[in-house]
Amino acid sequence: MKMSTESELNWEEYEAITRYIYEMLGSRDGIKIKGHGRQCKVVGKSGVTHQVDVLTEQVDGGRQLLTAIECKYCKKKATKDMVMKLSEIMRDAAIASGIIVCRSGFTKDTLTYAEHLGIKLVELREAGENDAEFEKDVEIANIDLKVKVMLSRPKIISINFGEKIIQDEAQIMQMYHVNLHDGKGGYIPFGKFVSAFSEELQNREDPSETITKNYPLNFKLHCELTKEQIVTEKIAITGFLTKSDQSFTRAITLTDQVWMIMKEIFDNKTLALSKHGMMWNLSHEG
Image (tube, rainbow, N blue to C red; front, side, top):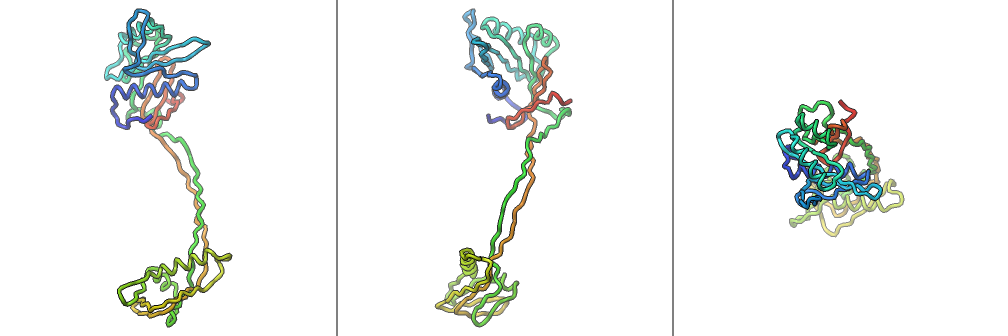
């Protein structure tokens, strides 16, 4: 179920959230959602059709037990008239149980009357800054991430251009990013020879063995390195393959945030719903 992350809901979203909660809570007890929304209607013994916000169904010993859930997304507390209306619908449509879910709580008379009729009252609202009895950020999982990485790279110890041999490590590293020019406006990146040398090492039975690979040229190439110009008709690279273990482990903690608070008035249970649809029992806290 995709839920809104905005701080303000509308009544349709409120009904959808209520349906989701009771679908999740009821699944373990064989309770199913029979209907919800404007199209959820029941016909009473009187012949009158009644609309119910959420209707659940449970089969017990061959008997169908229905529960009508009314959702009140209003700024004022629910009144006893709402209890009376639900009670009449239940009696007319042979609905066994009733629940009123309200955002803003219930008046004192509503509490008394609902308890007398056996109708459950539930306060479901968005968590606010004043809810200090529980942690708003909830830890849901700890993951130890182990990544195996073996890094292979060629170790070049000399580059032979015929008239000049480069063995200085800093100069060799510079050559990785140098272009060799042919004097006619064209060029070949020296990195192309490094890649070919690396591939040659990878394909050998013992890549750690030091080898020399010759790359003959049929034309002259010019290379400018530290203000020194090199003219070459051949390239020979000497080196070996190094391997280093770059594996690492990371500990990751996944958290979610409490979004909605659900308090069952008569059962003294408190549940929390996250923005991603996860639920926690908060009854043991506070």
